[in-house]
Length: 171
Image (tube, rainbow, N blue to C red; front, top):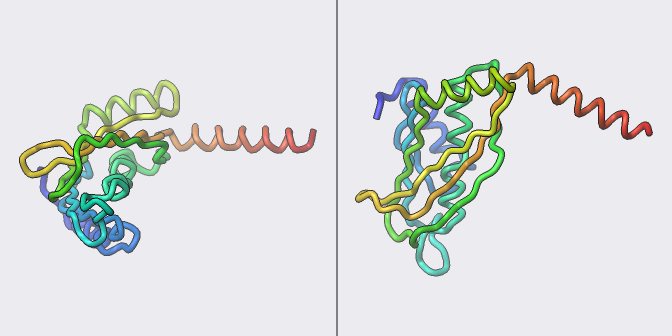
């Protein structure tokens, strides 16, 4: 994994103590200085333990929540709007051990996203992340779809939607 910067180190410390993320049971182990790689750990603990003694499915899901959106915001910059749009989870086996997830956005993916936005102004892009044990066995697969748009395109689209809603309410 690429080296962590002082800024990403500070952000990681803040997020690991942020109550909304801490409650997921996840722990951010590393954020690369270029925001293209994030490594997260999820342990079976008092916070993540379910009725049958395995890691609660919601912990897999919530501990993986913010990363692709944050990574894209940092890599694309202020001229873009990024929102989590949807997500789905497929469980492969019950989690009874410490699990890890690696979030990666390559330069090629960033170029592909930017190219699509140049063409259409917006894109829905899906990422897949796997929760694995230290040997690489997959316990769950999460697909996260992120909406990304050029900020000007997004604002025009939002204004058109509001105008349409206003016209419909006056009819």
